[in-house]
Image (cartoon, rainbow, N blue to C red; front, side, top):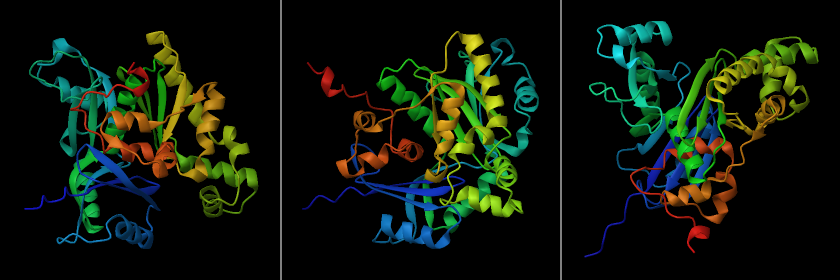
Length: 350
């Protein structure tokens, strides 16, 4: 009797700029990365072609069964320090939701996890004060699920991509023995989610009401364009290099980042030394360099391949260069499970 083949693994990231696909030799490790495909968000023809390429032989159900990471604009990923003495006090968490997170609790689907290791927070024990509140409006969750299914994808797992990416980056920094606190930016159309992450976990978080849309009027003004729509098309295109205008475009965002970083550094005595922009389209890649230069820090030099190997995900040479681009890191983080111990790097096996 022949052994049946392990089913392929499929992984999908849906963010504001693009849809990204990965195919692996299995859904759980050990696995080999076989394919990476990207298409622009909102392009139905490119999306259909991406689905066809990632799974040439359609499943009997007609759906691509995949782990899916999503980045809904109204998502919440917020670090908070709980008052443990008040944890069992009736109404305390409701107070945190309304006054700190500024949300209506009954309209959100939320989870509380430890900020250092991502494990579910045990409210009954209440042993750790630093947590991450993660979630999104329930109506947005239902809309995301409908959109994913409507696109022909059945989510075996549906995750907030931010949470998966932050956990993976924490693990990767620990693997490389990096001691440098890292600024992580997820720049959306109208909001930038900023985090400070180290090998010890998520150290700080802050949503900033500044995104790509806030940069468009500046492009319009500086280039003397007649309307915002023309500026928006130019901003998103490859036809004009905006790098020289970078410091001006991020001026307001930079002010908020400097405030967050300054508060963190005063509180901890640690200096933020590098920055990484997740999900950044190549045409807007100048933004990370502009932020790094303006803050006087480095862009993260991240090779995820050895770290992925330590987590039983092998990357072939043909895909190694692509996988090292920061925009793929969120998708690759969906491949990783943390039930295995890090493999010892080859250079240490002596």
